[in-house]
Length: 148
Image 1 (cartoon, rainbow, N blue to C red):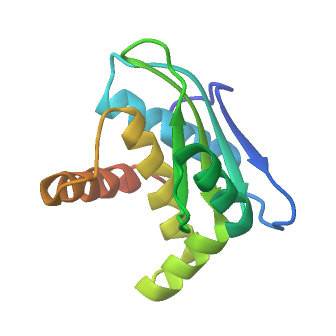
Image 2: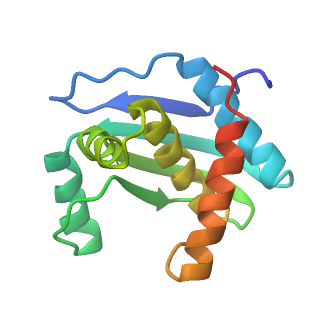
């Protein structure tokens, strides 16, 4: 796996008690996903912000005018095509709930959500049935690259 680039950062909003274990491995993995999926893309910076439902629903209302819970919101702040710069907000509460409903480990669902946001930054969408199917396929391929 590639060496960490120090371009992917992880932040935590109170009151969550979550801490990402093995952040360097996650950084290496996400960097590898970019290089395999879009080798010509330039990674400027990604900030993953882990928070709770209350924090994320406020962002959803304020910036997207949605009054619903969600597991992830990805803000693409890149200024040029082919560059990745973003803040990605993830509700740990939603990820935990999704994992329980899907009867899968929390860590697996967290990886899926993290790479989901990254795939959006590389141009993948999930509005139509076909887009959702492709997104799931790309998520599975990316998750297979994670070696922990």
